[in-house]
Length: 319
Figure 1 (cartoon, helix red, strand yellow):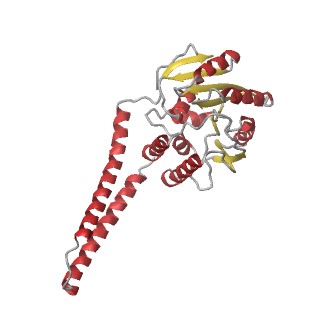
Figure 2 (spheres, one colour):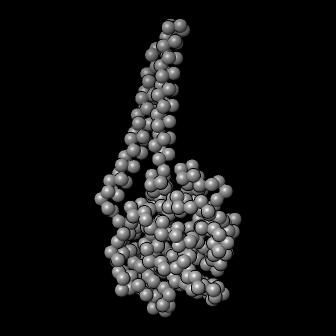
């Protein structure tokens, strides 16, 4: 009998998490061919989310609660959960109830038909305009920087085979990006259409700063295309500067109107433009070097403060 591990990163979800867990339990009653476990990871939520997790662990022996020592972000929380799964199939979903656990069977069915990873696809996402814009930018970034197929829809609700998660766990550095780890592990990825619900309580934990940090993780951890783009931009700027210089010389020699004065404003605009491009490229290189430095210093993906539930005796300090 195969086992399904549900991995749920939790942040500000003390009001919604019990409903999500209850829906998983009700769903698994209809999937008698599988056993299950639920891994709940509290990403240092400022509310009483871990208190809720502790209570849920006491009510169900299939639930394990992990409390992180500080806020590491959703992807690091997922990686912490991956290190404690024991199932043959892993399902990741959100803690706010917007990703319907009752439709997990559709994802599992595609896995059983041969797919390695199955992502939920939504016809209409019930997020705010800000979150939908962030998702669109993230979609564009993964397609350009990580080579994601255009017709593949990525979301936080997905199912994967155990070998994919084991491959993802090999990434031990800071700043994990789960989508990048999936895309580099397998190309056998499909979509399943599911409904996306309205948020019943609370608000999204993603701010503009967190979204920007997520995008930086994506294109600096798994792609060198930004550096190549910077090189091409530098070549273009150098060619444009050279062409403008030739144009200025020709204009000075052959046209020479009496009122011609050397273009101070044009000169300053070129200096400002080239200076800005140089700073942008240096900043991009510095971003790569800084992340390499942090990784070389063994900065942890996550640090676990406490584990409750069936694995409470196996407290792990970090990865």
